[in-house]
Image (cartoon, rainbow, N blue to C red; front, side):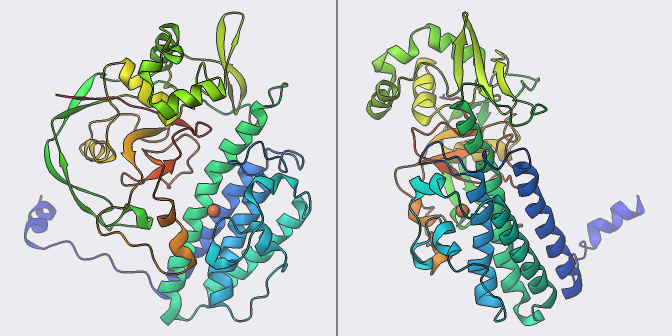
Length: 415
Ligand SMILES: [Fe+2]
């Protein structure tokens, strides 16, 4: 009781910032942990698996492993360690993704043609950069440490993004293989989360949206700003496969009135009749997963749907998709289940800059800002998102026809 009483009169002391030596230890441990997770995900794959690129949007595992390494080399080591020697002068061209200010680069759709450097060469590249980054962490002068560690932190979050892409990209590749390869027999597909269902009122009014300044965020989550939330209710749970089967059986994929014009064009061009990776065998639905071909669980949330499909389903259900602001306010208020760790949720919000957003100068300013057109925002996180990477203000974004990510939806209804 005495402690409780004291807390009313004496504000809690500010947590003491770590000393420079403590900070070196914290960042070295974080760096090792993230780098090891990438290799753990790749370890399920053979050298042949790691070369394949099944479509222009997906990248080979070997490329992911090398590209995240190039990111540290280009943005952390070269500018901040005068003694650093670039591992191979040919690699920046091969492993720069889209940073125009960082120099010319290999064509994205042709990444699968690069059989050399081979997997062992890429392992050597990773080891070279790992050692150099650890040296820099240990030796960076105290006056430069905050700036250098902030670039390191971006590199770690960047690598975590590629850890998720590594899985979604290899799943797409394996789904093209008639033998239904298994990435990991122990992989657990999404399962239903129990608890009260139905729709809940999102608190109407003016709410702050965007990152609150505590901990890391990407620049696209800022500036924090006010949004007006009208009377709207949001589904506590994600839409399930049983509901999606009802959509299919009601002719949802054959009813143009349910679809946006571009969505209907995609249905026809791609021959969509079910979510991505669904296949019908002897009247039963199966889905290609990271554990191979598995029966579709009617109780589990639907995944691998495009924005166009999410939008058509919402129209079919007489509902809407939530805006990203409605989603964030509802999530902060604890109104929604299955927000994180199952599947990203399409919102009806176009991926646009928040009011006042300006991308940073230089190559790292290309990270998010230049993609703010023609894509839609997804919120939450997925079962492929690495631990510690999720945030309530996180803005993921993809083109509306994309469905190789672990993407789902939750409905909203206006009151
Ligand atoms: Fe990247």
